[in-house]
Amino acid sequence: MLLLAPLLRPLPPPLPRLARRRPGPLVALGLALLVGACGSGAAPTTFDLTALPGAARSGAARRSIVVAEPVGLQPFEADRIIVREPGGAVSYLGGGQWADRLPRLVQTRLIQSLENANRLKSVSRPGDKVAADTILITDLRAFDINAGTREAVVDLSAKLIQESSGTVIAAKIFQARVPVAAVSAPVAANGLDRALSLVLADMVRWINSGG
Image 1 (spheres, rainbow, N blue to C red):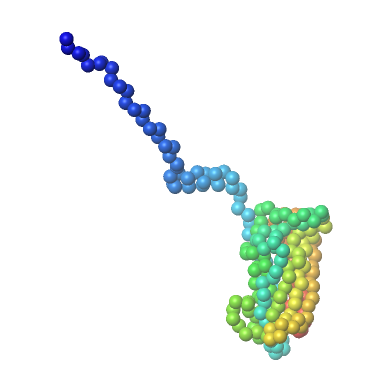
Image 2 (image 1 turned 30 degrees about the vertical axis):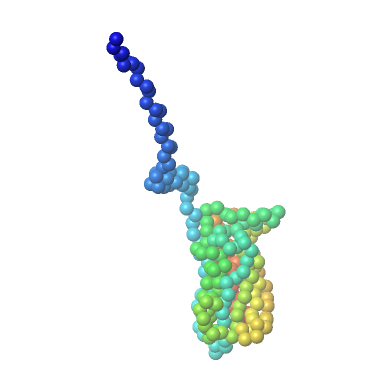
């Protein structure tokens, strides 16, 4: 008697599950750009600060000075315009930013103002490797809009230090307040620029007179 082969064949083993593929770098980049485009608003307007205008030289050049970058609290380290609320809280004003980090921008305009006054032998930064007999160190105590009084406030303390001995020759605090009509980026930037001009004028006179 012949034996017939079974008609039913065994089922093949189950196929392995396909691993979920991660999106490639181009897909991921496209998604990131899409998310960024959806969440981004209008670019903030960039504002600059101005140095004092030039003046004719009067009298002989007395000394060389190195102007250090101002030191300030963490909020002043950015390039944002700061608003101080009546309770003391600080925030960044939307729609505007400075052309550089605030301490470096103030340092640059102070150097230019001293150069424009034409009373010093040389004005430089610490990294310029220029020999100088005096170092100017400043502390950025305030550079903001006071929302309670509607004023632009600039407050700088300054020390003149003899380079050879490290002795403090003179020290002074310079302050200026300028009314602002509104707490908006263009008005705030203009008010702070005018307040800084008043402070720079006083500082240049003080430095040129020997402190």
